[in-house]
Length: 340
Image 1 (cartoon, one colour):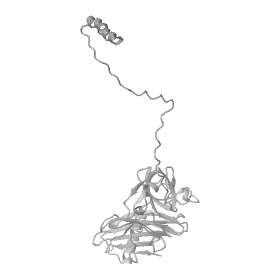
Image 2: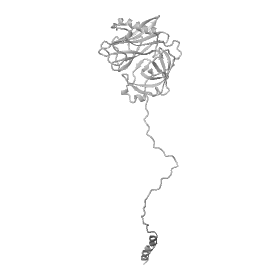
Image 3: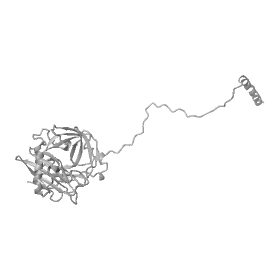
Image 4: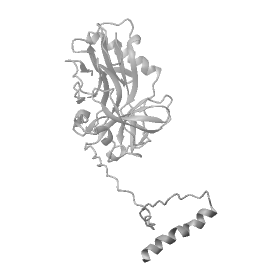
């Protein structure tokens, strides 16, 4: 009975609304369930920790001999040539056998701010400061990691393009920049003396005469022994040049060192090579210094072959190499001679 009464009243309750608003329709009701908003954090969001990269280990070597080559008035690049020791020299690591050589080589060697003493003509002539950069130089038969940096030089009438260099931290005693005997300057006298030295050696060594000696001179440099004696080094190349590449059929190269003695220039050492079945080996001067502190000047030489160039070091008073890059070739038998 109570249930019937409620059903009867329902139309009566709806009727007034229908009569007062004829266009009214019932659109229904929609429901959705949403999660509560996240709580507001009062601390900064923490980023997930990044994976740490493995640290590179330095390449363990003894003190090195370097070459610094100018690239403008105040910039230069530094090239390691060989490991330097009192007993002699040894080769740099082979990149093919040394993982991450380029990235590891500057570590504890030429990091940013590392200073190197520049040597030219037997004396200290300036400072090279590394900027920490490194790249691979493949112009040598054994590729080398090389770096960049800035130069501070003495005033030169004609500034050299290349310097031998030693890292300041490798030296027990840093040579003073105020040497009593400055590096010899290039003069017409020295240039002419190089020609006379070659003319003296050509018949002595049985070398075919070229059309002109001056016409085959590729390079001439002046250096000293640090106690005032002047010397020169010159390269003469026929039917070829101080370049990487095949030589002509009649090509030869003559590297000459001459010293000033009692006002005269006399040959001290020569390296004569004929381009033959074993290819060419044209020698060019890089620098000279008493690098092993044994009272003897070591001549540092770049040798150009048919497919690459390499480093060689020979004492001025000896006819035997004390160092050669393993990828280079030995001089021909009797090619190097000392002249008294």
